[in-house]
Image (cartoon, rainbow, N blue to C red; front, side):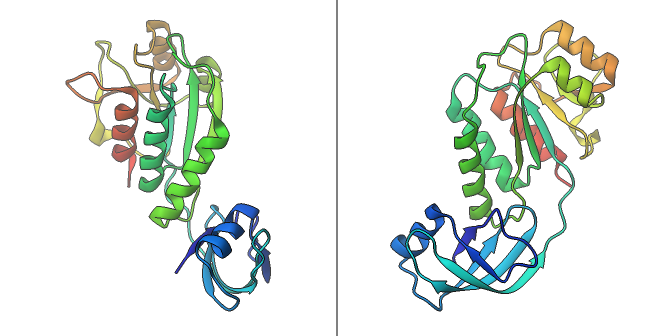
Length: 225
């Protein structure tokens, strides 16, 4: 059954108009006819089954027949410095969404190589990954935040860095707290100390030096329930 993203779908809706992009995919690409049964998800846990009522190529309308609300999975929050190459960020986001990422925050760190991210493109990648993996929750993506500001908002969590310090193992971490991943040049000593004083625990991620996106994916899998 074909699956479509319906971000404005509400639990009490009886009908829904697909976006122009999803309408085009439904009518022009898949060539669906009136009466076809499709599946909708809103990225917030709501799943619905509907019948195509109006096969308009730009604003297709469906009638909702049944719906189901899925409980959210445990919070899985990664905060990372964006990599210099956007394709690495996109690769990570795609894989992490498939695994069940809840929230991705981008950090502006002392040694960050990128100062901006294409949020619109990243959301499209997350939507596509959510649909492909048949997940019901779209990860929240937050734009660049100053490292210090993020620590102020989230005073406790986990941090992966390369400096020598007491560290816990990956098997000791628990979902619900953010995991900080630094840029290719690592967090600065000031950032590491700020996080430590605030309440962050350093995590021993590997005996080898990992790329930012690799470390982020490793942290993501470690936080899975």
